[in-house]
Image 1 (cartoon, one colour):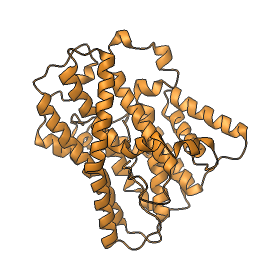
Image 2: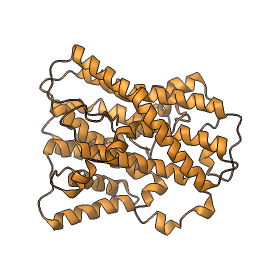
Image 3: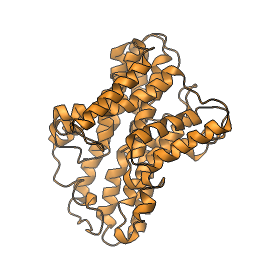
Length: 379
């Protein structure tokens, strides 16, 4: 999700825009938590319409996983030659350096806010789950190493990092597409079977985010493999929608269902349909997403995903007792966007350049360039 503008010429700009929109949905999801019950919309509207994405925040994160599988597979396929160790090193730089800085920012902001009381009118997340105890350097190291689920402590410095832990583990396996290029149908079948077995065995819950302990944490990562595998399959097979308004209408209905129905399998189908719809260069949606504010949101989306929760918590700590909830949400969103922009230029772009410098020094010539991490990722 590190968005480096037009650093590479054959970049899929419409996918950058989708990544930015998904990150903003996650942002709105956490802003929605700032509203106390009198401001909440009825469940019938929140849970059975596209507003469900804002109410639960799960769909955009699952979309990040599908998009990661798609763009990372394209990145691997473009290469004339490939080194696994080079891939691992650059993925670690691109994903983990911003995470390290983001967690340091959270640690600093915690100490700036620790003596400010949190309004109990707000969602308990803002005064119990996040920053619920004094963080230590051990906590920071475990979260930076993406081991919060393996140790059972979670990610209290930044809950959004949970999805990036799964993304890093799965993305380092994606280069196997170089060896197993033709076997995308078995990949989907095996991944789906593993996911079903994990759910019905009780090893992971249907709404799993993080496991507890090493084995359960790895089991939850295996569950999310099916979403990466779906993106992988689309890239390897060169999946494109057939021509015709009826087909496109059905695809958009799948996207609508994925936004409105609380089933991971439906979100998976809707995510694949959305990627196929906007990947058609002749479509209006593709042309719309290739310019304007959508590209700016795509540019900062990874930074926004990493930093928005600590920024929200800071605004809540300093302003939550005297500012109305709606104003608090607006100020939080504006501050999150500003901090993400600064973070992009001061942390994410240097991490990107460092990974490119490493590639130029030790990697053989390649065709095209590396695409950024996309896991958002939400959340």
